[in-house]
Amino acid sequence: MKQTPFTQKHIALGAKMAEFAGYNMPISYTGINEEHQTVRKNAGVFDVSHMGEFILKGPGALDLIQRVTTNDASKLKSNHAQYSCFTNEQGGIIDDLIIYCIEEKNLPAGQAGVYMIVVNAANIDKDWEWLVAHNTEGVEMHNISDKTCLLAIQGPNATAILQPLTDVDILNLKYYTFEKGTFAGVKNVLISATGYTGAGGVEIYFEDKEGAADKIWDAIFKEGAPKGLKPIGLAARDTLRLEMGYCLYGNDLNDTTTPLEAGLGWITKFTKTFTASDLLKQQKETGVERKLVGFELKDKGIPRNGYEICDEAGNTIGHVTSGTQAPSLGKAIGMGYVKKQFAAFDTPVFIKVRDKLLKAKVVKLPFA
Image 1 (cartoon, one colour):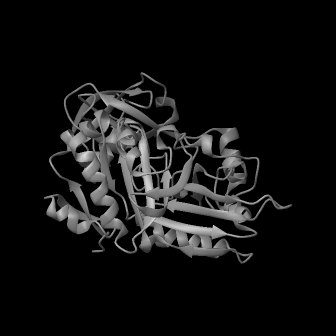
Image 2: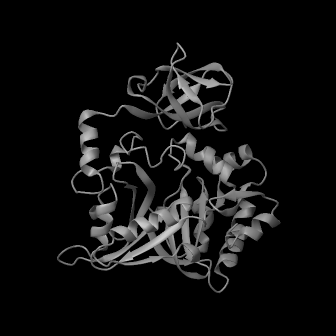
Image 3: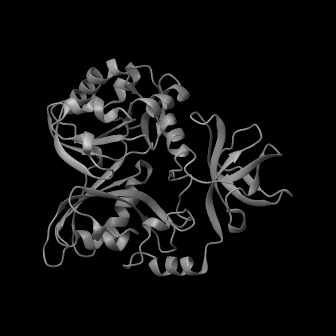
């Protein structure tokens, strides 16, 4: 298994470790519920250095991004980020991702600049190969995944706790914008008002050179531990994102689900041409046959990925993609794809758990 620069710190802190996307990652420290509530009510630190980062620069960089992603990256200004996805020739989602406009250049074609694309850990190789295959104009590209550290400090008190460590005004950093500055004495740290928890906070990107990883980790906890900041594992990250209705690639999104089926029409812009855009435009006009919905259980039980979703007669109408007992809500929730006629809010559905049909209903996202 691969390690992040923080792996030994997780082990020393007593984290329960497990393989995730080829990395030895912390799943939990003191327990999912406690860690979940720490982030919702205060602040927590996630090591997500397993994520992938690609740099695209120079003339043609924006054009390449426009051709392979669904959102309109031409709208991006310097220091702004955008949620988007890659689609394959069938309109399926290769990966969901975030595009960072590091440097915008106002040249005549509007195509020169520097961009960072952040992708899911399990898809780094697949995504890189996809970009390389479509880089027909010789755009300068760098896969910086192995040398880039990423910590997500999330929660309502995260920015207040971190502000003394940086010269960047993170207290007033707007959602999906970022700044580069000094953090804990380390220069050239990218601080981004993004995250996967819905609890507020920032994500910080930096290169681990001259002991930067240790320096930043130690400074964060020296500043934050007296204020209740704690390390958080990936299990709580999953319950936090699910309460917000955020999709997880490999569960709620994959190569066979389209952005429109997944409720991601808002990042699918037909003002430009991209891979399978004609097919997706047709799907938008004719309507999808299935939709990703949120649901909550009325009966006791926990929905899991792969469980069947049924109608009252027991006919299969879809399947669960994500499910959990939501720590903030005190009830079982989940997401899954169902036939479009069952996708309206308050529609009664049933989750098949060990041959039992548990009552549930379709609800609006986010759950929290």
